[in-house]
Amino acid sequence: MSTRGTSTGRWAGVGVAGVIILSLASIGAHALLIPGFIQAADASSRSTGALSTPTTVPSGQGGTGSLSSTSSPAATDLAPTAVPAMPAYDRACLRRDNPATGAKIPANDPFGDDIADLGDKAELQRLYAVQSGALVPLDGLGAPRPCDEQLWSLVKATAPTLLGHIDELLVFDADPDPATGEFIIEGESAPKETAPDTFDDDHWRVSFAPNGLDRGELAWLVAHELAHVASLNKDQMLSGVGADVCATWYTGTGCLLADSFLRRYLSNTWDDALWDDWDKADGKSTEKARRAAYQDFYDNHSDSFITEYAAWHPLEDFAESFAMWCTYDEDEPDRANLPTAERTDSGNKVAWFDAARRDLLPAFGPGCTMLRQFAVS
Image 1: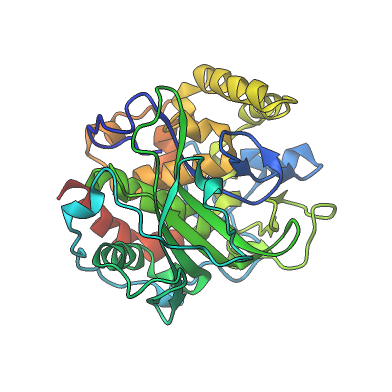
Image 2: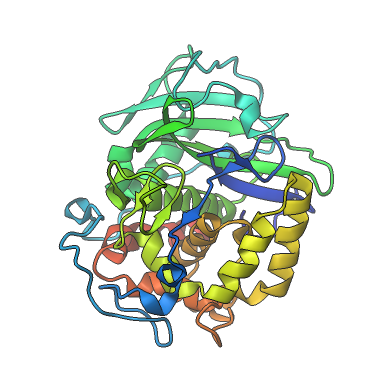
């Protein structure tokens, strides 16, 4: 969900989601799926104070010790050493409604072959394979469109350390005229499906619907989806460990390393009370009841979340907090005025990313500096 900008077009009064499809736990409209997030049986393992991390965290946000792991899951050897140049991006690429292209998703594409998974009125614009960092059409059409090349340049400049994990780029139009209150998907991060309900978290498709956004909203969307890839790729997981023996958290594709971005983030910014209340909301038996419960959960803990959508799932909380950190300067009012009284407050969640100096900050800091410039240009 984008919170930046003053767009009153397709997003006015509409629930917007950047989603990740991993398991069968449906919680939203239009086949929106979010992982079954299985925690370790030992309740103390989810407590913030129980996990010592090698990351320096802001005051009041838990331990700063070291783990037995001797290697970082981040690909810092590819980390940029300087802020990249801001890619060109034509404002016409954000037009509200694009003509149909006739593009087709190949049957049995391992990342999904039904555009309706992105919404009943979602319209495929283009689909590309990523080969050696370049876009190669998969949709039966000709050379990549200039707008798509520019979007891909923005993605590459934001997170060069993730390029080895991204196999496909899908560009689509979301419904430009949704009804008030209708749930609209504007982006997705999906791992490769190798068998029914079995996924390869080293290979991802990222999907974006730029139509009708402003530059700030597009920046937020790019950051949100890349946050999912950054936190759920195989470098963040213990290989071959299933849900039954996972001692940290099982995300639906794998068992998080104790030293992973997501484990460290959640252990430092969620407490037992927040987990307990979210578990109650997530445990509702129907989609309608869950959505109502997530809203109540947000209303009761609004200081803890950047957006209402962040309260739906811990993975979305990570992605929304990352998007705020990545697209807003720390002195911008929307970020500077976030609450910080409690360690679970949203301002402290955003500050956690500044404190991840060993791996996350060098990997994404330069690209996010560029993305902040892009958002306001």
